[in-house]
Image (tube, rainbow, N blue to C red; front, side, top):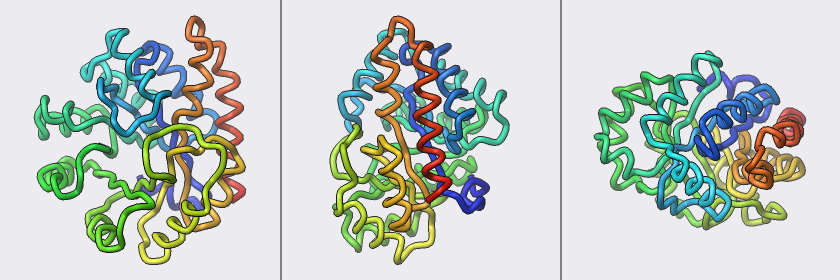
Length: 262
């Protein structure tokens, strides 16, 4: 994980929900992302009630689950990605229900064995994650913390004290989804955060254009995250999503280039 932050360029993480609309397409999609410059894969295990996600990713989760995606199949997907890409960091994103029902130790052991490097769970607050924090360290899995523009200074201090790998900063309060512009509140939030803490900050939620990247990295973030923007491209042609891979590759390359130049 640390390697990608040592290159000196902006880091690009891309989030996909595995199995939308099929495992086979997700494998080709993730390979397209890596080939065109994505530094970290955020591998989403679909959940029926994705409360941190907006309509685009809600539809992605629904389609994946309707098409038979399960946590076990997702674990096999992680293994395939790791076999094909030995060094790209993989951050598993899912909701706590999936971790709880499998058992914390079992889930962490399984994603570690499959090749994941980190875990992000949007619906578990820091105050309720003590077991997950301690167990994740035992399994050498970074538990990624999240902050938002509404996070108080006192709460941020507690979160940063537990953070490992990097911190995911949401550009806006609310849920995932494409936004038109980067808000001044976002830039002030990033500057406030990076002024006091050394751990890398990646900014997601709403990043959908190359011109969004420069001001965010200029404010002190180490990189950006895209998610819904890629899903919106292929969901326009779900009967043949492979036809969208060329457009997705161009989009990803444009974000990666903006990261490199920022």
